Image (cartoon, rainbow, N blue to C red; front, side, top):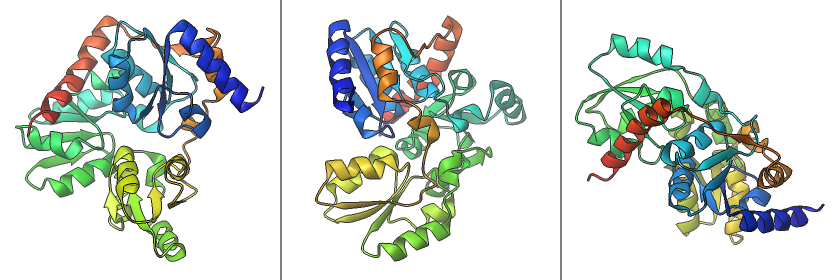
Length: 307
């Protein structure tokens, strides 16, 4: 079958079976085209919560599917490709965090949403890259233990000097691999382009950006800007997807290092197998994990709603 034939087959079956398909923004274009909702991990979880369908297929990585299940425990949540993990989400476990918490008992533990369901059960508040500064600013306690991404944590700490933020040495190995030399080379090659960079990159790289923000922030900036050329400092699919959305502008990937193999492991045939009931992996979380992991997400929603 051709790509278009597979897409049409998926569209037909998902309608017949009342299935909702979620695609993270880092997915390939042919997957985004058949999704009901596209966005970052929390946007997708929120969309799944509102969706009328009782079965949800996540085209992303495991922690994203877990977050969907936490917010919609009554729904059947399927990870399209069981091999799609996330090195950042999996690099710290609950035992480690509990041992660190014991050393800093008066600290509020803040978890980037890019963490496992198990790790979320040991945390007080969750944040996204777009909401981290606002949420941490709204936490009454000035003592913050931030995990796992030390680069995002450093970005927040720079903007909130009144907070005492302790960082653990974790993060996204894909974004962290980008160097200042990569940025300088990209700017030299594309002198008229603005550099839009994700805060998961190291601080010295983010410091060379014309704009620093989440994936959705980068996309919104590029779409709404009157500028015509952009260097995109996040997963390379964003540059490609923006080019489809804004054909009158030019988008350049900051570095070929910005390729997430975990995001690329999901294919259209995987999704076709899922809607046919022959593939993927249903996300199963026990009642206690669902309840305990939900606490930090609910707290995030509460703090984000504050001024």
